[in-house]
Image (spheres, rainbow, N blue to C red):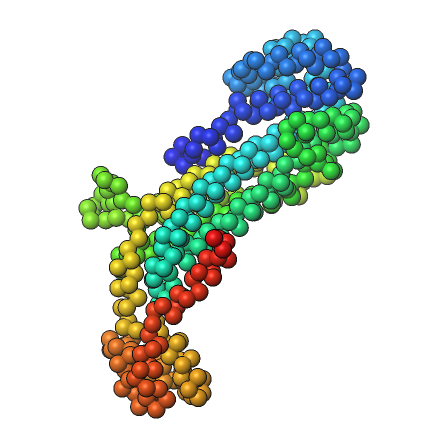
Length: 435
């Protein structure tokens, strides 16, 4: 990803320096295990670790690769230059390139997942704080973009919290899905390397041995990982889209924080645009777009091919860096979000009581009126509000058929906003716990 949408800690996971350091650790731990098994001399295994003090020269590795056309061989050649050919002759004993590449890739994905889970924790904290702050801040709920019945802004935030809490659970599962390693040699048969080497390497690097690798770790694991990133991004976009709609001039119930000196338009000085949440919508599209190539990587030829390689060298860093940035941006938006309760109340009352239509409908049925007739009576009066700007309660009181079933006081009793918030505590207890 371009620096504009990147954060340094996630970017560092995918740097060449980090990659080569992980490759080295895989090789060094493998040498330790082979020395313990008596396959190679202990002195050679110890000598490999002397390279840990060295900085691998990325430019030199690139220089060697320009000749060898093979990145792992280029790295091993450079490692030999550091520790000497005699000490390096047992490095990579019985291993194949995928043992290094796949195990490293999964380590990077696990580290990326850890950052993303931490990002989600920050977002969840922000959503919970705003949910509690606006637990009983009443606003209009909308279906199809049209006024429906009252909700609270706190419920909107609680819904977002519950969704992102599910996202966190999915990320934990996705992390576990890719937390495997393979050091099983060509075509995965362990013909030239003891399975105990794999067990040792994985234990040292915090992975689980892949039960059956071919020459690669099965790519259904990675498909699941990147699909999870796509789902998380989609949830992020849903929250961003809600904020964008609520910031529209005709609505203006919430607004992204507009900092001093910020400009909204090069042409119109009055503009305060929802640029951050619009940006999040675009970033979510990118992350989702990287899930499909990961799924197409599952079907490799026989024990392996490298059609997946170019895909993963792109989507590994790009998807994780993008989602990391997006989660941090949404957290900032939620933290600083401007909320306008007066506008919420004004919008809810714009159609003069229509939000209580269902309650009046139900009250009529309780008075013995059929549901069909109740619907007809309520809709008849509601349409006068829509089309003529009338007051809903006034129209109901003036309707002889309604009055035949209900007194004025009974009609008025159905216009209490508190009726719609009586179970907010119950919902919050389900989301956040009884406390």
